[in-house]
Length: 460
Image 1 (cartoon, rainbow, N blue to C red):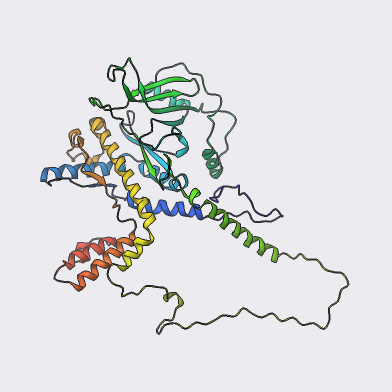
Image 2: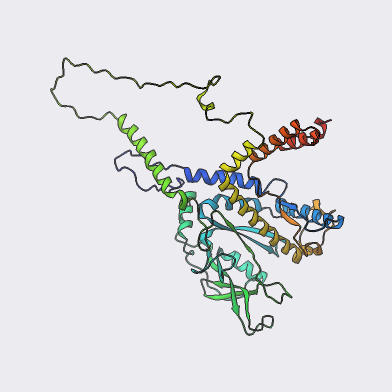
């Protein structure tokens, strides 16, 4: 309601024609954050980079580069929905505080798949200290009857006798608000037979399991909400792992960490400010509306004679500026001849909050690449590969260790402005110390940052 995207707007004057406008400060912040974040974590060439730990050998470098090229192809072409899902996630992240991305391997499509899971679809225990250490994480999945039968035929769910759902699953409060924004209205009839299945990542003690031998171990428990029957139960640890450590399929993205398992977002941080801005905006519009409305009270028969009224215009005071300053905005501006690094320091200081959020996104992307690497280690030979990677010699053994794969996003750099400031500082240092810098390489970096095509033809 406070975002300005829905039709409902609480508060405001009650007279006819009163403004119901909502200040879009939260919506604008969400769009701005998503635009900047996506540019960093999901560039057009792919989000994967390399970082070799320990001694750098030609063999290690060759394996890392092959994995980088293959996973960049996966993220940009094979998993065609990944960018769209990440864009939804980064747009919703400032609103919910915590959002989630799910990765899995689809046997029918023969490729990894990605899906954005909103915070209202994830259920955590009340006492959970964090997402990854929670004893139970439950995901609510709403699907049509056709999708439910497809999963039964694919062997994901048990073949049970189920009754067609006559009513749609109860929507969450966030889902209802989102439907109003989209203009969707649910019908009374459940035409598609939509039903809800709970996927619970939980620790269980099953005596009949020969692998766990009755010890507490991680499982994925799937329960149909309509029939209250268990439709699936899977071990959630890697085969041969004696420690039976839980495998992560859901990746958490955080905005501002707080106490407990859920992070906080803009509604908790500036929700009151948004309401105040909305009230001020409405008061301004309502006052303009009233002042321009031809309504008044007139005393019949009254006459006023012998009076004169003079309205003084608003005065403008002049101030003395420094010599050579012809624009008042330049008084508070920094000098163009500031020392090297001053501009960059000011940028970093002003964007310290965004920098910390970007570091958390970088960490989440690292987790996502680890999950994708595990999927490649298990199902690489069964995947459908495109024509572009036919000549790329890569095997499952290349993904045995994924410590050489990192997100290409730099956690210390969070905007193009900061990169330009770095290049300007580098150019200034190269100009003052020409014997210490390769000026051609410096200029090449600057032109590359400016996205100038065919740099080698421009530089001699």
